Image (cartoon, rainbow, N blue to C red; front, side, top):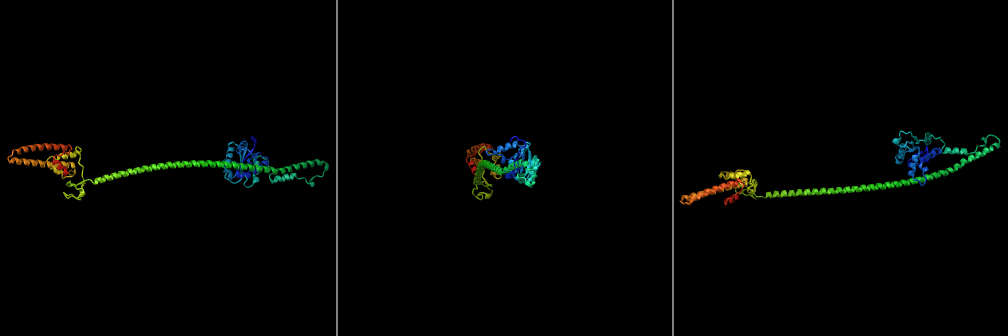
Length: 413
């Protein structure tokens, strides 16, 4: 009962039920106040509440050790509770196993080799007087129930012995009646224990089914998480591939533009590096005979005002007599510069035209025509002014073209 002092709680694994029941019956027969679920949980009671209540009200814990018990969470929980509540813990080794760490320093009873010897040690450790058990107890009860042989009775008068004989007969009848009711009580206890075992088994199956259901729900949850993660990864991979495809497309487009520009440059007009003649589509220059391998792409003429400063100076210098102009048309890199070539040719043609008009004026003056002198004066003044203008325009980087002469110079370029 709750609160009883000296009660012993027996903890065991379900696989050791037979040994635990036998040990409990022998201890109870010896007069020990104990609690065992197979014997003390009645139909209709909740076994978990009954176990907890009995464990709290017990003064000591007797634990049956075996490989199964060591692996049982319930047995380990009961041991931990007893130690934490400073209850006495008595290990009984039923089958060889690894002793739990918290019980290694506790003296234990070994019943693996001999049950009766271990039982006697257990009774002595519990302070209970040993009583005969099993067959030995039955033989003693039978001996007590049997009448005394006549030969063993003392020879005394019969009358004084009559009350004694009546008392002896009554005493002998009492053990016989108890022996007759013992099997029925044992069967009832066994049936009750079997019903309890079935109830516990059903409860365990329900608990296992609930655990399996929760585990299945957890697995489904993890599976959904994995699927969502896989979808996100697939989307990221698709975006990465799309970006890579766009980058390749842009790279290919840039490559095509570069190739088109290169082809356009290859198809541009080519001019001879020696004389500047157009040699597009020719293997050699038709004027000077230079090989087309030395041909260079025609340089585009610069718009007015965009010539380089060095080109401006060289273009103006081409008008300082005809000698610099001739040199520029022969020496690299000036001969390949369209701006300098234009002013060099225009300077040469301008000088030739001036000399031609000066000669014409002298001829007319020699024949006695007064117009010859006037023509010479006009030619001198006009050519001087034009020379100054051409010099300034060239220095300003402009391709100022004279009528007729400028067109001829442009064609040569």
